[in-house]
Image 1 (cartoon, rainbow, N blue to C red):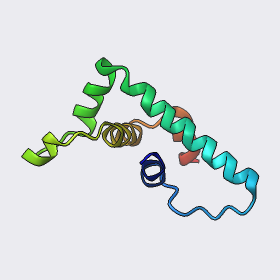
Image 2: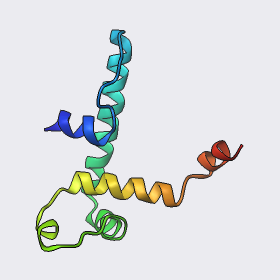
Image 3: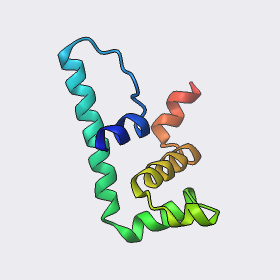
Image 4: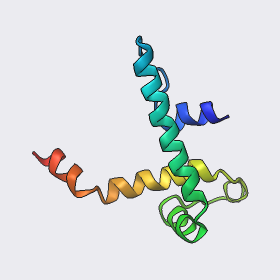
Length: 94
């Protein structure tokens, strides 16, 4: 399940990496991203408002289903798009 989540949610469906070193780097980056999301799950006072505001759900079925990592990743992605960090704003503008 971890590999499926990482491949799907962290958007590395089919990387074409031929060297072993680059494959290891990709796996390390994915592991760091996954560990970051897991560490955020420990802070309910932070992640619950974030998820509720940036990844709200409607409908009876979707309210019952719990998928905290997917919802947290989606909420962080939407938050980052709404309020990009200053460095990324400078890079994208010019």
